[in-house]
Image 1 (cartoon, one colour):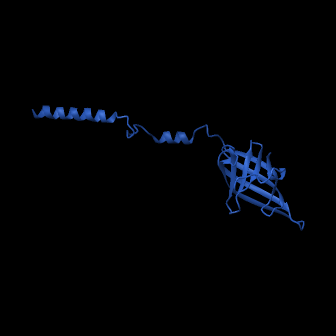
Image 2 (tube, rainbow, N blue to C red; image 1 turned 180 degrees about the horizontal axis):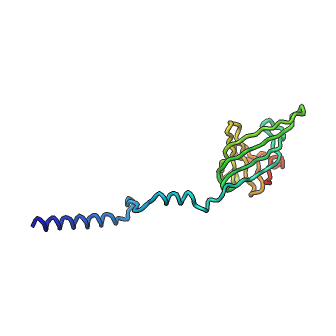
Image 3 (cartoon, rainbow, N blue to C red; image 1 turned 180 degrees about the vertical axis):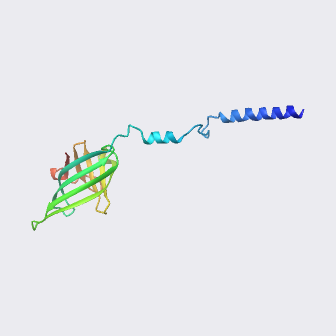
Length: 163
């Protein structure tokens, strides 16, 4: 009798364990997850290679002096976050030419006043220079916008063109 009771109890426990393991609710544990699954997602071939985009043009400096800008953007796609380097050259009123170099992160934002789909690049300097905000005009030009994301001017002097 004792042996039959033990066998019956074991069978009930097995049935209970199998039926509980087959729950398909929200709290059901993931059956198999491996380290290679996560690595596969990181090494996904659809991410693409690091790309370099170069833009050149004239923009006014913070002091209002027209300057030649060369902006190099490195990212895994034009509309993805990345890094940048910027060279700004201008001639002062005394005739001296000044060149400033800056590097930092490119942050992509979406939307400006009157255009909720516009792509905006915010350049955040590693050296705490004021942020530069540029709205993309397709993939061929970047137009300077102010802190409130409004175009500074429609003048060509506020655009950088892709090289």
